[in-house]
Length: 251
Image (cartoon, rainbow, N blue to C red; front, side):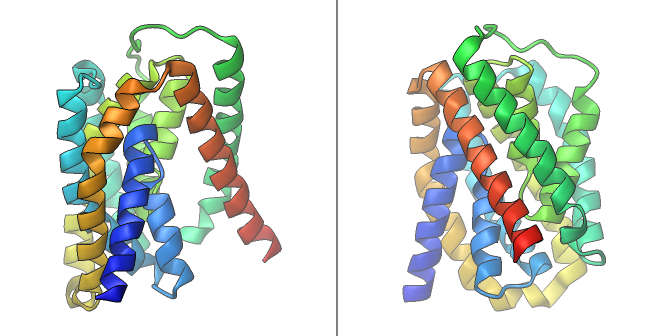
């Protein structure tokens, strides 16, 4: 029971951050699981199975609070699903650490860019859709599965840095993540099979805590001012990226 309560707390905090900022549920949860000895593939699988439930609640909450750009959502779903399924399959055979340094460097640069824009630029009321969304969503889905998290950091970070309204980007990305997570989870179940049953308490704890936090996180996302939200997004990305690079290169 104490172990499940710990996972519930981890899921609650991770989803509160993810729902409000559009990122970091998978990153923070997977980082915790791997720090206590869970293998990367099983950690990512456990997180994404729990995310099927948390992203459903989060996506519906963002719809209710008017945080979803339907056109943007439609452009992200299909390539995100394809990339996520492919990434989940690859992770069962290739270590995710191979691409982590490159992703972390990219995220660090995008985080700095967001912080700069938060303090000196005005932001458009709506996000302008362009042809770069398809590869962005595919890369985000692939990286999310392989790295245990990355859909929000890569997709949300890029769209906000391009000038998208933070709450609309965050809501749209969170809703699309539900479908991406389903594809990843089904792939993990098919490839890992019974190994996942050994980690049922992780899945139950993470999804319980995450579902409790999802509606609150969506409300916080709607109420925070645009500049404050961008500042928080940029800060979270920079700190997470620096931490990952430090662990990879100095430990």
